[in-house]
Length: 387
Ligand SMILES: [Zn+2]
Image (tube, rainbow, N blue to C red; front, side, top):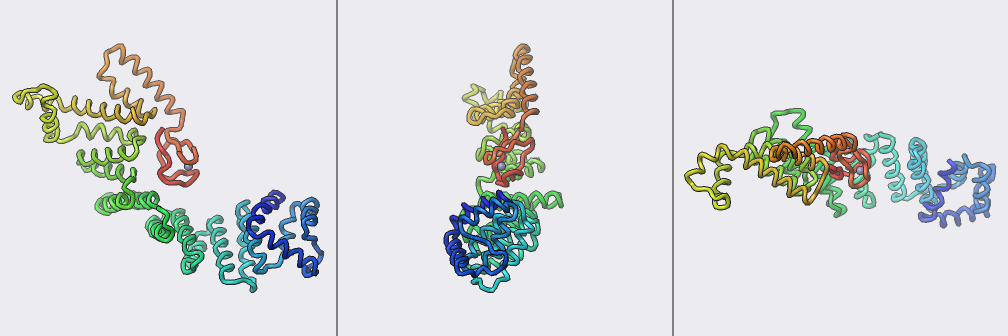
Protein backbone atom coordinates (compact mmCIF):
# COMPACT_ATOMS: atom_id res chain seq x y z
CA UNK A 1 0.00 0.00 0.00
CA UNK A 2 2.90 2.34 0.84
CA UNK A 3 4.39 1.80 -2.63
CA UNK A 4 0.96 2.32 -4.16
CA UNK A 5 0.73 5.74 -2.57
CA UNK A 6 3.99 6.90 -4.11
CA UNK A 7 2.92 5.56 -7.51
CA UNK A 8 -0.01 7.88 -7.17
CA UNK A 9 2.06 11.02 -7.20
CA UNK A 10 3.40 11.07 -10.80
CA UNK A 11 0.08 9.95 -12.26
CA UNK A 12 -1.81 12.52 -10.31
CA UNK A 13 0.63 15.19 -11.37
CA UNK A 14 -0.35 14.59 -14.97
CA UNK A 15 -4.06 14.02 -14.55
CA UNK A 16 -5.39 16.81 -12.50
CA UNK A 17 -3.62 16.50 -9.20
CA UNK A 18 -3.00 20.21 -9.17
CA UNK A 19 -6.67 20.98 -9.68
CA UNK A 20 -7.65 18.47 -7.04
CA UNK A 21 -5.04 19.73 -4.55
CA UNK A 22 -6.44 23.23 -4.95
CA UNK A 23 -9.82 21.71 -4.31
CA UNK A 24 -8.60 19.98 -1.09
CA UNK A 25 -7.02 23.19 0.08
CA UNK A 26 -10.22 25.11 -0.39
CA UNK A 27 -12.17 22.36 1.27
CA UNK A 28 -9.70 22.15 4.15
CA UNK A 29 -9.66 25.90 4.59
CA UNK A 30 -13.44 26.05 4.61
CA UNK A 31 -13.65 23.03 6.90
CA UNK A 32 -15.87 21.30 4.37
CA UNK A 33 -14.29 17.90 4.96
CA UNK A 34 -16.68 17.17 7.72
CA UNK A 35 -16.05 13.47 8.49
CA UNK A 36 -14.14 13.04 11.73
CA UNK A 37 -11.30 12.61 12.43
CA UNK A 38 -10.11 15.57 10.44
CA UNK A 39 -7.25 14.97 8.01
CA UNK A 40 -4.75 17.57 6.92
CA UNK A 41 -4.64 17.31 3.11
CA UNK A 42 -1.97 19.94 2.56
CA UNK A 43 1.34 18.77 1.09
CA UNK A 44 2.89 18.69 4.57
CA UNK A 45 -0.15 16.90 5.97
CA UNK A 46 0.02 14.22 3.22
CA UNK A 47 3.75 13.65 3.86
CA UNK A 48 3.01 13.24 7.54
CA UNK A 49 0.15 10.83 6.76
CA UNK A 50 2.46 8.63 4.67
CA UNK A 51 5.06 8.64 7.48
CA UNK A 52 2.63 7.82 10.26
CA UNK A 53 0.09 5.56 8.53
CA UNK A 54 1.79 4.15 5.41
CA UNK A 55 -0.61 1.20 5.02
CA UNK A 56 -3.77 3.29 5.24
CA UNK A 57 -2.66 6.52 3.56
CA UNK A 58 -4.44 5.91 0.23
CA UNK A 59 -7.64 4.69 1.89
CA UNK A 60 -7.74 7.74 4.15
CA UNK A 61 -7.25 10.12 1.24
CA UNK A 62 -9.97 8.36 -0.78
CA UNK A 63 -12.30 8.43 2.18
CA UNK A 64 -11.81 12.14 2.72
CA UNK A 65 -11.77 13.17 -0.93
CA UNK A 66 -15.24 14.13 -2.07
CA UNK A 67 -16.38 12.89 -5.46
CA UNK A 68 -17.03 15.92 -7.62
CA UNK A 69 -16.41 16.86 -11.27
CA UNK A 70 -13.12 18.45 -10.11
CA UNK A 71 -11.76 15.39 -8.33
CA UNK A 72 -13.02 12.60 -10.60
CA UNK A 73 -9.71 12.44 -12.51
CA UNK A 74 -7.88 11.73 -9.27
CA UNK A 75 -10.40 9.04 -8.38
CA UNK A 76 -9.91 7.45 -11.80
CA UNK A 77 -6.13 7.50 -11.33
CA UNK A 78 -6.51 5.85 -7.92
CA UNK A 79 -8.81 3.16 -9.30
CA UNK A 80 -6.29 2.41 -12.04
CA UNK A 81 -3.54 2.14 -9.45
CA UNK A 82 -5.55 -0.41 -7.48
CA UNK A 83 -5.95 -2.52 -10.61
CA UNK A 84 -2.35 -2.15 -11.74
CA UNK A 85 -1.03 -3.14 -8.34
CA UNK A 86 -3.10 -6.35 -8.46
CA UNK A 87 -5.90 -5.26 -6.11
CA UNK A 88 -8.55 -6.01 -8.73
CA UNK A 89 -11.49 -6.70 -6.40
CA UNK A 90 -10.82 -3.45 -4.62
CA UNK A 91 -10.69 -1.60 -7.95
CA UNK A 92 -14.06 -3.12 -8.90
CA UNK A 93 -15.71 -2.05 -5.62
CA UNK A 94 -14.11 1.38 -5.93
CA UNK A 95 -15.41 1.98 -9.46
CA UNK A 96 -18.85 0.51 -8.64
CA UNK A 97 -19.21 2.96 -5.72
CA UNK A 98 -17.89 5.83 -7.76
CA UNK A 99 -20.39 5.40 -10.57
CA UNK A 100 -23.31 5.79 -8.19
CA UNK A 101 -22.33 9.33 -7.22
CA UNK A 102 -24.85 11.87 -8.49
CA UNK A 103 -22.59 14.81 -9.18
CA UNK A 104 -20.96 13.27 -12.27
CA UNK A 105 -21.52 14.13 -15.91
CA UNK A 106 -22.36 11.56 -18.62
CA UNK A 107 -18.78 11.64 -19.92
CA UNK A 108 -17.34 11.07 -16.44
CA UNK A 109 -19.71 8.15 -15.88
CA UNK A 110 -18.57 6.61 -19.19
CA UNK A 111 -14.94 6.97 -18.11
CA UNK A 112 -15.65 5.15 -14.85
CA UNK A 113 -17.66 2.45 -16.67
CA UNK A 114 -14.75 1.87 -19.05
CA UNK A 115 -12.35 1.47 -16.13
CA UNK A 116 -14.81 -0.96 -14.49
CA UNK A 117 -14.81 -2.96 -17.75
CA UNK A 118 -11.01 -3.13 -17.59
CA UNK A 119 -11.24 -4.26 -13.96
CA UNK A 120 -13.55 -7.11 -15.04
CA UNK A 121 -11.07 -8.15 -17.76
CA UNK A 122 -8.27 -8.24 -15.15
CA UNK A 123 -10.49 -10.30 -12.85
CA UNK A 124 -11.34 -12.74 -15.69
CA UNK A 125 -15.03 -11.74 -15.57
CA UNK A 126 -15.14 -11.50 -19.34
CA UNK A 127 -18.92 -11.69 -19.85
CA UNK A 128 -19.41 -8.64 -17.61
CA UNK A 129 -16.61 -6.77 -19.39
CA UNK A 130 -18.15 -7.69 -22.74
CA UNK A 131 -21.54 -6.17 -21.75
CA UNK A 132 -19.92 -2.91 -20.58
CA UNK A 133 -17.77 -2.47 -23.68
CA UNK A 134 -20.69 -3.25 -25.98
CA UNK A 135 -22.76 -0.56 -24.22
CA UNK A 136 -19.90 1.91 -24.58
CA UNK A 137 -19.69 1.24 -28.35
CA UNK A 138 -22.66 3.58 -28.70
CA UNK A 139 -20.77 6.50 -27.12
CA UNK A 140 -18.59 8.94 -29.03
CA UNK A 141 -15.80 9.07 -26.45
CA UNK A 142 -15.35 5.29 -25.94
CA UNK A 143 -16.35 3.81 -29.29
CA UNK A 144 -12.76 3.23 -30.43
CA UNK A 145 -11.27 2.08 -27.13
CA UNK A 146 -14.25 -0.23 -26.49
CA UNK A 147 -13.91 -1.92 -29.88
CA UNK A 148 -10.21 -2.51 -29.06
CA UNK A 149 -11.10 -3.81 -25.60
CA UNK A 150 -13.66 -6.20 -27.15
CA UNK A 151 -10.93 -7.60 -29.43
CA UNK A 152 -8.91 -8.48 -26.31
CA UNK A 153 -11.95 -9.97 -24.57
CA UNK A 154 -12.82 -12.26 -27.50
CA UNK A 155 -9.17 -13.15 -28.01
CA UNK A 156 -9.00 -14.32 -24.40
CA UNK A 157 -12.21 -16.29 -24.92
CA UNK A 158 -10.74 -17.75 -28.15
CA UNK A 159 -13.88 -16.63 -29.96
CA UNK A 160 -11.97 -15.95 -33.17
CA UNK A 161 -14.97 -15.02 -35.30
CA UNK A 162 -16.00 -12.25 -32.86
CA UNK A 163 -12.36 -11.18 -32.36
CA UNK A 164 -12.06 -10.80 -36.15
CA UNK A 165 -15.29 -8.76 -36.33
CA UNK A 166 -14.18 -6.29 -33.65
CA UNK A 167 -10.60 -6.11 -34.93
CA UNK A 168 -12.03 -4.98 -38.28
CA UNK A 169 -14.28 -2.49 -36.48
CA UNK A 170 -11.33 -1.13 -34.48
CA UNK A 171 -9.23 -0.91 -37.65
CA UNK A 172 -11.87 1.10 -39.52
CA UNK A 173 -12.64 3.38 -36.53
CA UNK A 174 -9.04 4.07 -35.55
CA UNK A 175 -7.32 3.86 -38.94
CA UNK A 176 -4.62 1.71 -37.29
CA UNK A 177 -3.80 -1.44 -39.28
CA UNK A 178 -4.79 -4.68 -37.55
CA UNK A 179 -3.97 -6.88 -40.55
CA UNK A 180 -1.48 -9.12 -38.71
CA UNK A 181 -3.95 -10.11 -36.01
CA UNK A 182 -6.85 -10.31 -38.49
CA UNK A 183 -4.85 -12.78 -40.63
CA UNK A 184 -3.99 -14.77 -37.51
CA UNK A 185 -7.64 -14.87 -36.37
CA UNK A 186 -8.61 -16.34 -39.76
CA UNK A 187 -5.85 -18.97 -39.33
CA UNK A 188 -7.01 -19.75 -35.77
CA UNK A 189 -10.56 -20.23 -37.06
CA UNK A 190 -9.30 -22.43 -39.91
CA UNK A 191 -7.26 -24.62 -37.56
CA UNK A 192 -10.22 -24.94 -35.18
CA UNK A 193 -12.50 -26.13 -38.00
CA UNK A 194 -9.83 -28.53 -39.29
CA UNK A 195 -9.55 -30.01 -35.79
CA UNK A 196 -13.29 -30.41 -35.33
CA UNK A 197 -14.10 -31.71 -38.81
CA UNK A 198 -11.22 -33.09 -40.85
CA UNK A 199 -13.43 -33.43 -43.96
CA UNK A 200 -14.42 -29.78 -44.06
CA UNK A 201 -11.58 -28.79 -46.35
CA UNK A 202 -13.49 -26.13 -48.27
CA UNK A 203 -14.22 -23.96 -45.19
CA UNK A 204 -10.61 -24.30 -44.03
CA UNK A 205 -9.33 -23.29 -47.45
CA UNK A 206 -11.75 -20.35 -47.66
CA UNK A 207 -10.59 -19.03 -44.27
CA UNK A 208 -6.90 -19.39 -45.15
CA UNK A 209 -7.45 -17.59 -48.44
CA UNK A 210 -9.34 -14.90 -46.51
CA UNK A 211 -6.31 -14.61 -44.18
CA UNK A 212 -4.12 -13.89 -47.22
CA UNK A 213 -6.66 -11.43 -48.59
CA UNK A 214 -6.56 -9.54 -45.29
CA UNK A 215 -2.80 -9.88 -44.82
CA UNK A 216 -0.83 -10.96 -47.86
CA UNK A 217 2.30 -11.37 -45.73
CA UNK A 218 0.67 -13.96 -43.42
CA UNK A 219 3.35 -16.70 -43.28
CA UNK A 220 1.09 -18.97 -41.24
CA UNK A 221 -1.69 -18.95 -43.89
CA UNK A 222 0.82 -19.87 -46.64
CA UNK A 223 2.21 -22.66 -44.46
CA UNK A 224 -1.22 -24.05 -43.57
CA UNK A 225 -2.31 -23.95 -47.22
CA UNK A 226 0.96 -25.73 -48.08
CA UNK A 227 0.12 -28.42 -45.49
CA UNK A 228 -3.42 -28.72 -46.84
CA UNK A 229 -2.25 -29.28 -50.44
CA UNK A 230 0.56 -31.53 -49.21
CA UNK A 231 -2.01 -33.82 -47.54
CA UNK A 232 -3.95 -33.89 -50.82
CA UNK A 233 -0.68 -34.86 -52.56
CA UNK A 234 -0.86 -31.75 -54.75
CA UNK A 235 2.89 -31.34 -54.24
CA UNK A 236 3.46 -28.65 -56.87
CA UNK A 237 0.79 -26.36 -55.33
CA UNK A 238 2.00 -27.21 -51.82
CA UNK A 239 5.56 -26.29 -52.81
CA UNK A 240 4.41 -22.94 -54.21
CA UNK A 241 2.77 -22.10 -50.88
CA UNK A 242 5.79 -23.19 -48.83
CA UNK A 243 8.08 -21.11 -51.05
CA UNK A 244 5.68 -18.15 -50.69
CA UNK A 245 5.85 -18.54 -46.88
CA UNK A 246 9.66 -18.53 -46.96
CA UNK A 247 9.65 -15.57 -49.38
CA UNK A 248 7.73 -13.61 -46.73
CA UNK A 249 10.11 -14.63 -43.96
CA UNK A 250 13.17 -16.80 -44.62
CA UNK A 251 13.45 -17.70 -40.92
CA UNK A 252 10.62 -20.18 -41.38
CA UNK A 253 12.35 -22.47 -43.90
CA UNK A 254 13.53 -24.81 -41.15
CA UNK A 255 9.88 -25.25 -40.05
CA UNK A 256 8.65 -26.39 -43.47
CA UNK A 257 11.87 -27.93 -44.75
CA UNK A 258 10.88 -31.59 -44.38
CA UNK A 259 7.80 -31.09 -46.56
CA UNK A 260 9.71 -28.85 -48.98
CA UNK A 261 12.30 -31.60 -49.56
CA UNK A 262 9.47 -34.08 -50.09
CA UNK A 263 7.71 -31.73 -52.54
CA UNK A 264 10.91 -31.28 -54.56
CA UNK A 265 11.14 -35.06 -54.87
CA UNK A 266 7.46 -35.49 -55.75
CA UNK A 267 7.14 -32.85 -58.45
CA UNK A 268 5.13 -34.53 -61.24
CA UNK A 269 6.90 -36.31 -64.06
CA UNK A 270 5.77 -33.70 -66.61
CA UNK A 271 7.30 -30.87 -64.67
CA UNK A 272 10.55 -32.77 -64.13
CA UNK A 273 10.74 -33.38 -67.89
CA UNK A 274 10.14 -29.72 -68.63
CA UNK A 275 12.83 -28.74 -66.15
CA UNK A 276 15.30 -31.08 -67.82
CA UNK A 277 14.42 -29.73 -71.25
CA UNK A 278 14.83 -26.19 -70.05
CA UNK A 279 18.27 -27.04 -68.71
CA UNK A 280 19.29 -28.98 -71.83
CA UNK A 281 21.81 -26.56 -73.24
CA UNK A 282 23.29 -25.86 -69.85
CA UNK A 283 23.67 -29.56 -69.15
CA UNK A 284 24.92 -30.31 -72.68
CA UNK A 285 22.43 -33.16 -73.15
CA UNK A 286 21.32 -34.51 -76.52
CA UNK A 287 17.53 -34.97 -77.06
CA UNK A 288 17.92 -38.73 -77.65
CA UNK A 289 19.35 -39.32 -74.20
CA UNK A 290 16.77 -37.20 -72.33
CA UNK A 291 13.98 -39.75 -71.93
CA UNK A 292 16.17 -42.42 -70.44
CA UNK A 293 17.71 -39.96 -68.07
CA UNK A 294 14.48 -38.46 -66.78
CA UNK A 295 13.66 -41.31 -64.39
CA UNK A 296 17.17 -41.66 -62.97
CA UNK A 297 17.97 -38.03 -62.76
CA UNK A 298 14.87 -36.62 -61.16
CA UNK A 299 15.96 -37.47 -57.64
CA UNK A 300 19.39 -35.95 -58.19
CA UNK A 301 17.75 -32.91 -59.67
CA UNK A 302 15.35 -32.62 -56.75
CA UNK A 303 18.24 -33.03 -54.33
CA UNK A 304 20.31 -30.37 -56.07
CA UNK A 305 17.36 -28.01 -56.22
CA UNK A 306 16.71 -28.46 -52.51
CA UNK A 307 20.37 -27.92 -51.60
CA UNK A 308 20.54 -24.81 -53.76
CA UNK A 309 17.33 -23.47 -52.25
CA UNK A 310 18.63 -23.98 -48.70
CA UNK A 311 22.02 -22.45 -49.56
CA UNK A 312 20.35 -19.30 -50.90
CA UNK A 313 18.19 -18.99 -47.77
CA UNK A 314 21.08 -19.80 -45.44
CA UNK A 315 23.25 -17.10 -47.01
CA UNK A 316 20.61 -14.46 -46.40
CA UNK A 317 19.17 -15.67 -43.08
CA UNK A 318 21.40 -18.17 -41.28
CA UNK A 319 19.81 -20.17 -38.45
CA UNK A 320 21.25 -23.07 -36.45
CA UNK A 321 18.38 -25.42 -37.25
CA UNK A 322 18.63 -24.72 -40.99
CA UNK A 323 22.42 -25.16 -40.92
CA UNK A 324 21.94 -28.54 -39.26
CA UNK A 325 19.40 -29.62 -41.90
CA UNK A 326 21.70 -28.39 -44.67
CA UNK A 327 24.64 -30.41 -43.39
CA UNK A 328 22.41 -33.45 -43.07
CA UNK A 329 21.15 -33.16 -46.64
CA UNK A 330 24.68 -32.55 -47.98
CA UNK A 331 26.09 -35.74 -46.43
CA UNK A 332 25.43 -37.83 -49.56
CA UNK A 333 27.61 -35.52 -51.64
CA UNK A 334 30.67 -36.02 -49.42
CA UNK A 335 33.50 -38.54 -49.33
CA UNK A 336 33.84 -40.92 -46.36
CA UNK A 337 36.28 -38.73 -44.42
CA UNK A 338 34.28 -35.53 -44.80
CA UNK A 339 31.07 -37.40 -44.04
CA UNK A 340 32.51 -38.50 -40.70
CA UNK A 341 33.64 -34.97 -39.93
CA UNK A 342 30.25 -33.44 -40.87
CA UNK A 343 28.33 -36.03 -38.84
CA UNK A 344 30.22 -34.86 -35.73
CA UNK A 345 29.26 -31.26 -36.45
CA UNK A 346 25.61 -32.28 -36.96
CA UNK A 347 25.59 -34.15 -33.63
CA UNK A 348 27.07 -31.14 -31.84
CA UNK A 349 24.50 -28.83 -33.45
CA UNK A 350 21.68 -31.20 -32.45
CA UNK A 351 22.86 -31.04 -28.84
CA UNK A 352 23.07 -27.24 -28.92
CA UNK A 353 19.58 -27.01 -30.43
CA UNK A 354 18.20 -29.39 -27.79
CA UNK A 355 19.67 -27.38 -24.92
CA UNK A 356 18.69 -23.94 -26.17
CA UNK A 357 15.31 -22.54 -27.12
CA UNK A 358 14.53 -23.15 -30.77
CA UNK A 359 12.34 -20.07 -31.15
CA UNK A 360 12.55 -16.54 -29.82
CA UNK A 361 10.09 -13.65 -29.61
CA UNK A 362 11.53 -10.65 -31.45
CA UNK A 363 9.33 -8.36 -29.38
CA UNK A 364 9.97 -9.44 -25.75
CA UNK A 365 12.88 -11.89 -26.13
CA UNK A 366 11.07 -14.94 -24.72
CA UNK A 367 12.79 -18.19 -25.77
CA UNK A 368 10.56 -21.25 -26.37
CA UNK A 369 10.93 -24.78 -27.73
CA UNK A 370 7.80 -24.81 -29.89
CA UNK A 371 6.42 -22.42 -32.47
CA UNK A 372 3.65 -20.19 -31.08
CA UNK A 373 1.91 -17.74 -33.37
CA UNK A 374 0.97 -15.58 -30.38
CA UNK A 375 3.70 -14.95 -27.83
CA UNK A 376 2.69 -16.41 -24.43
CA UNK A 377 4.57 -13.59 -22.72
CA UNK A 378 3.90 -10.32 -24.57
CA UNK A 379 0.76 -11.56 -26.44
CA UNK A 380 1.99 -10.14 -29.76
CA UNK A 381 1.14 -12.06 -32.93
CA UNK A 382 3.74 -13.35 -35.43
CA UNK A 383 6.71 -12.26 -33.31
CA UNK A 384 8.12 -15.69 -32.45
CA UNK A 385 10.72 -16.78 -35.00
CA UNK A 386 12.90 -19.88 -35.41
CA UNK A 387 16.49 -19.39 -34.25
ZN1 LIG B 1 6.89 -11.84 -26.80
